Structure formats: C-alpha cells, structure tokens
Length: 181
Length: 252
Image 1 (cartoon, one colour):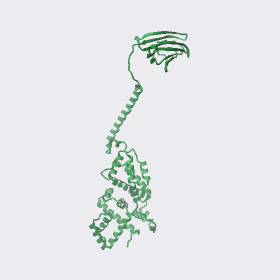
Image 2 (spheres, chains in turn blue, cyan; image 1 turned 180 degrees about the vertical axis):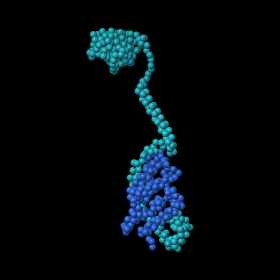
Image 3 (cartoon, helix red, strand yellow; image 1 turned 60 degrees about the vertical axis):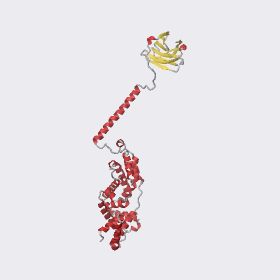
C-alpha cells in the first residue's frame, strides 16, 4: 500500500477533487469487496457492503486522521460494516449461522470445490475469529496493523488469531477436509 | 497434550515470525511428539487452504454506484478556501463566514446594478471631441426669406458665424407640414437640430437631406458647418399635407 499516494489522494479529495476519490475507490474496491465477501459469503451482500463502506469513507473523509495509515482506517470501516451488515441480516432472517451451514453438511463435500468448503468452514467460526483470519491470511496484514484495525493490543491479536486458526482447523477436521489419524 | 509454548511456536512459524533457533527447537520437539506433529500438519494444511483462496474481482457496479451516490460538492466549497484544515467547524465561525459572504455578495450585486445604471444613463463610450459655446447673438443674418403661401406662412432665416450656418425656421400651419432640406454633404455637414417650440416635431436626417415634419406649426434651427465656403447651396422643399407647395434653392 502506497501511504504517500493515499495521503495525496485524500488531500486532493478534501480540496474538492472528486476524481481523487474515484482513484481511491478503484484502488481499494477489490480489497473491501474481498473482506466483505469473506465475512458474509454472499456476493450481493459483499457488493452492498463495499458500496456502503466507500460512501461512509467519503462522508467521513474530513474526520480521517492522517497520522494513521489510510488503508488501516479503511479496513476498520470495512470490518465494522461487514459485521453490522451480518448482524442486521441475522436479525432480519432470525437464522443462526449454524442452521444455515449445517443444512448443507451432508456427503456433498466431494462435489464442492475446496475453496467453497473452506469458505463454508470459515462461516462456522465466530465473526470475530473470522475477522482475524481474513486480515492475516487474505489481506496479509501484520499483527500491528491488525491490532490497529481491531483496536486490540498485539498480544491479544496473536492469541486470538491462534485460537481462530485452531478453531478453523477443528472445523475442517470435523468436516473431513483434514486427516485426523 | 501439546505444550502451550510449542503451540505458539507452530503459529509463529505459520505466520513467518519464528527465529531460526526457535524453528530448530520446534522441529526437534515435533520429531518426538506425534500429537504435536499432527497438530502442526493440520494447522499448516489449514493455512495452506486459506492462502490458496482466490482473490475475487470487484464488480464495476461498486465504483459506479458509489460515484453516483456521493455528494460531489461536499468538499468543493469551504475547503478550496481554507486548504485541508477546515476552520469552519464551530457554529459561530460558520455564521460569521456566512454573514461575511452575504455582505460580499451584496456588494457585488449592488456594484453590478450601479454599473448597469451608469451604462444606461451615460454611455459615453463612442463620444469624443470638445465642448464649446457659440454665442448665437453674434450670428449675422445672411438671408431672411418670408414664406407666404395659402397653406402656411412664416420665415426662413439663414444666419452665419464663420463657417457655422444656422437655418432658423418658423412655420405656421393648420395642416400637416413637412420641410425637406437637401444639401451636398461634401460642402455642408449637419451638426445639430434644435427644436424651439413644444409642438410634436419629427426630425429625420438622411444621407444628403434632412426631413422635418409636424402636425402643424414648426419652429426649429438646423445648424451646419461648411467645408467649402464658396459653394454652399441648399435646396428647400415645402410640403403641406403631403403635397409639394414650394421649392427654392438658397445660396448661403
């Protein structure tokens, strides 16, 4: 991530240059979309979340503190939006994650692509644990960057990430994706 | 039961933060503990699954929707004046700014109106020359021609001061009257028409003539300057009710 370039784009946008914001959207839309999808496992929801994230970012751009990295701030908003969207959807449908996903647990694994099965497994761990895995494995953030995004200490990030990964491993073992002999 | 220390080492290795010494120590431990070895293998496989997950392409709708949804003028006004550090945060400052802006706008609008008024009342942009006063009492009467006709009566006096020539006309009539004065513009130049009474009179200067008409009486002075003093002749034609009633050539 080019921090200086981000800072310039933010500055330009605050000076009234909408094209600069368009550049920021172009630069980060894939990242935000991927985070949203990994958190929701739904393409439409991911698109809605990504749109909401960028609109929120634009509206709050004058509140952005340039001493922090822009992308960290963006991640934080993206994660919050993903969690909120998920909570809202859960509230509306009154369905639990486990119900949604255990329904598809049968002997269908062989027909499903590994990636889809891993995504399914991801949805079976808690959203907070999933967040850590998304940031570490999909976005390749450092412990420090994750700590900023989630407003946690590095120590807590490490311990929670280890727990999350262990939990996911257990789900994959349970679902027969990992050997257990 | 795997020691907590080694569980942490396994995660550190997966994340790439393990030192060489720690790594050697970990692998010696894994050789001796089958449970730890299995844990390590499963966790490494989990990490591998995650790292192989594809990156999805964002839909082009995202940018399109976002750019159509945002208020593009949000940062276009105050920021341009004050850079990135907005001072328009406190309500009092905002109010003062709005008030000042209002005053400024008022001044601009008022100045614009004043300018328009001045343009309408005195557009002097195509005027040039000098202003002088000629004492009409100093003009000498060159000719005074009485006009006695059944339809109208009056006098036509030619007066002169240097190369300034005035033709003073008084005509009394009960019918529509028109006087056409033809002149050679290479010798004479019409400079002024002065109405001497309040009767509605029309003054229509042409290229080589001037037409003066009214519903009845006429009193006016036509002022010329001559270019070639020796050849000043004008032709005067009088019309009454649209009919030519008299025509004369007058040498000035």
